[in-house]
Length: 304
Image (cartoon, rainbow, N blue to C red; front, side):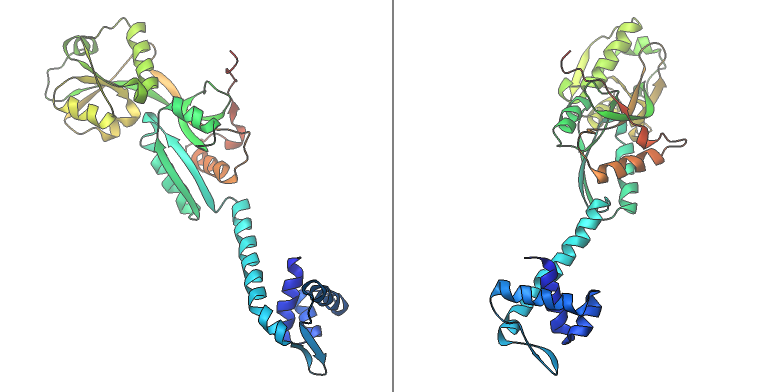
């Protein structure tokens, strides 16, 4: 049944007059008459009695009117919701982030929610390699990841992250090589920090540095606490040192393989207005920000 027929029924019942109802519906009176006649033929009953006093609901018309009003009201609500969804101001997206975006991603979500309060968002802490997979499976719609991705995703570079050495403050001053040979290197398990561990290994190899021993743990906060306790030292992204307490010393590193690009990625094969609005919001947050419409396409290495 065409919703226009039910709306004509509701408006005519409200106005009680064909001329007034036709004006309210922005149609001609003969067109309104045809709509009411068609609706009556479809429900196989008379809905109005016509007389000199206008259009008066029949007993059956009175019984059907409340349900017709509810359907018309629900349709209006649906169309309003559809309009908000089409503009990307209502709905839900899932966002992933990693170590390098530990501080950035929540700030970007807070900024976006101020402009789009009707959008529900979830934020999940995942290493980049897991985000790549979930972006392709549509489990995530946006990911803050190392770029360029090794899979066919579109991405936008945002900033360069770098390695730093983190050591306990109440310790003698030593060179990076001395720290690494005299204290255990605290690292994440590969399941949690595969990208960071690979970056650390490249840095150590390319700069001819050796470590005395390694101790593994599950998260950055535990590593920081263990460094404060004097158990060892750590090589971490500089972007996470904002959580470092004053009991730590932070040493910038030099040499080869100390930096990498961090950006935001999406699967462009799927349309998502909310996701694209979020990416534009993130891009605009950076001074001299990149153009979110000019995202780069990573090559597809799946067949390589």
